[in-house]
Amino acid sequence: MNSNPLSFKQQQARFTAYIKDPLHAPIPPDVKPERMKMYAELIFNNVDSFLSSNFPVLKKIVGEAQWLQLVRDFFSQHASKTPYFADIPQEFLAYLQDERTNADDYPFLLELAHYEWVEMALSIAQEELVINTHLEDLPNKCIQLSPLAWVLAYQYPVQCISPAFLPDVAPAHPTFLIVYRNQDDDIKFITINPITYRLLQLIQENSGLLTQDYVQQIIAELQPANTETVSAGGLQTLQELAEKNIITVTSHAN
Image 1 (cartoon, rainbow, N blue to C red):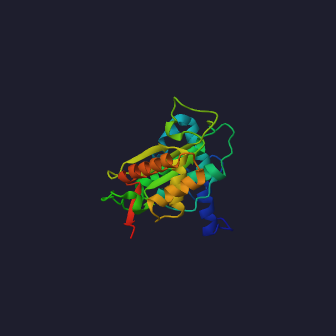
Image 2 (image 1 turned 90 degrees about the vertical axis):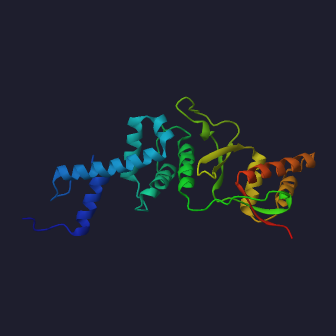
Image 3 (image 1 turned 45 degrees about the vertical axis):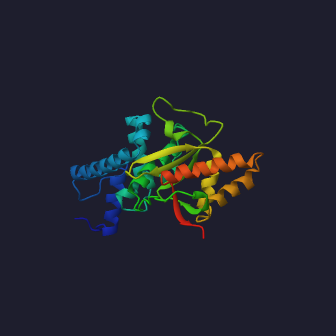
């Protein structure tokens, strides 16, 4: 008979330690080894399956063996702050950003993972898409960025990465994207130029102004030689984004 039985917390700690890292942690006493192995395999396979479905490109480019090693390292080393399966991809992203230190990883690994996470996050976002119905006279209407449209900047062209395209050096210029959920609940992306990126930043930073006000802010920042060309281009871009409901019309100027 064991004269010093483990407390419930101690039992829990040993059980959890084995589940997270069965290759190194001892099997807890008073639990059949085959049962513990079954628990460990079942939980790990659930996490692996969930991450595989949320990061399919990342899994494909690293290969099955390295992917399992990556998931195992995340599962054993990262202290998740949520018990919800839907939050596991964000925890995985936090692990890659703050804890992962593997010199053999692709240099774009974190950015690619973030891009794939954005697609997942937008697909399950609870916000309702606002459909624009009156887009005439857009320059004199107040606008804001749809919550179902994210404006992103990456060092690597993450939308192009595949087993056939694995850049080892970041291009000279960053990639700017809008990732958004459309009226059919499909996730789409648009590659944009730096001026459009900055224009959308201004809308994010101070939403609810007139469309023409944002264009004038861009002109004030750029101080272009031909203000009319930049003004016309900015208004045309915002018109096109409003037609895709990426830009939402909130009201008309009084």
